[in-house]
Image 1 (cartoon, helix red, strand yellow):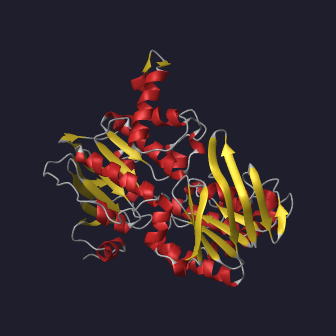
Image 2 (cartoon, one colour):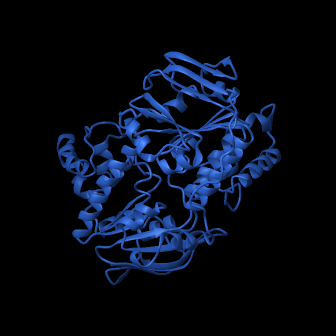
Image 3 (cartoon, one colour):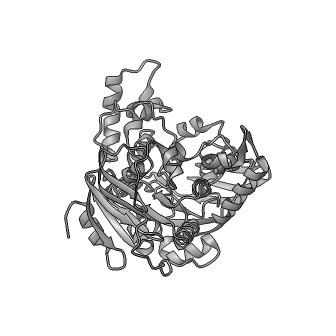
Length: 492
C-alpha cells in the first residue's frame, strides 16, 4: 500500500534519515520503534507530506508520489496523529476537528449546529462525551489526545500514523483505542503505530520495524521476535527492565503538606524526606498535577498548611516558589515548559537567567557553559545550542526541560509524568538522573501514569481519587492492583 525507497533527510549538518527503505501492507498494524531521535517521526512526517525528503522516493498504491504539503497527502488518504499535538486551544472541539477536513468544512460558510452533529459520532468513537462547542483549552492532555485521534478518523483515511497515541491516555481510554484499531484493521485501513510501549506493540501489531540513528535496522513479524530482541536492536545494548537498589531515606522532614485544599484538592496530607522519591498515582482528573500547581504557586491554597524544613511556605507565584527551591517539570512541555522558537541553550537557562546577567546584559559565555554542563548531565543529544529547541526529538526536548529546572538548584523537584512519550533508553537516563538527585538529598515528587515505573523507582506512592488522598503505600510491598483499587475509590 505504501513504501519508501532510500529516503534521506538532513537539517543542515544534522542527518535525520540515512537511506531508509520500508513498506506497509493493507490492513496491517505496523509498529515503528526506536529511541528518541532515531528518525521515526521524521519518516512519518515525510510520508505524510509535512516534511520533504532530501532524497529518495515515496510510493503509494504502486505509484511514486511527491507531496506539495500535508493537505495533498490527506486527500490521498494519509492521516497522522502527531506526538506534539497540532491543535488550537482557543478554538472549540468541533472547530479543531473540522480544520483541514474538506468533508466537515464543506464550504466557506459553516453552521455550528450542523458541524456539531457531524463531529459527535467521531467523539463517540474515541469515548469522549463532551459538548463539541467547548474550547479545547479547557480539556486535559488526555482529552486533547483523544480529540487528535478523532480528527484523523474524520478524514476517512486508508493509512493512519499514530505517534505515541497512548502516551497521555488512561487504561480505559487505551482499551477503547485498541478496539478502534481492530475495527479499522477489519476495514482494510493500515495503521503505523509509533510507540515505546513494548507490551502494547506485541499485543496489537503484526510487524515491527526498528530504527536507530536515522537508519532502518530490521523489520520482523511480532510473532517471530521478542521484546528483549527489539529493545536491544533499538538501543544497541541491553537495558535493565527494573531499577537498581533505592537509597535509604531518613526520618527528617524536608517538606510537609497538612490538610491542604485547592479548587481540585481536598484536605491532602503528606511528608517528603530529603533523598526521598514520592510517587503520585491516580486516574486522569484525580488531582495529580494539582499537587504540583499548589507547590509552585499556580493554584491558590484555600485551606491547610505547607512547610519547608519546618518553616511555613505559602507561595504567592512561581517566582516565589523558585526562590524557595521548588522546581516544576510540567506534564505538557509544549504548552507549559519550553518556548519552541527559542534556542536549546536559551530554553535551558530561562528559569535561572538572573544568574548569568548583570545590569540587564547577559553573559553569553557563562550562560552557554552552564547550559552545556547541565545538558551533558541529562545526556541530551543535540548538534548545537543555537538550534531551536523544536528541532530536537521529544525525548531530548524533555531533557532540556529537566535541565532548565535543575539549573535553578532546587531542593524539591516535582516531575509531572516526565517519561511520557520517551523511549526506553531515554527513560533509563531519566531514572538514573532522578536517582542521582535523590542521592544528593533532594526531595522528588514523581507523577506517573505507568504504575510499574512508580513501583520500581519510588519509595512511597501517594494515591489520589477525585482530589482526595486515599492512601500512601510502601512501594516495596505494594502491587499494581493495590494502587488501582485506591485510584478507583476503593480503600484497601
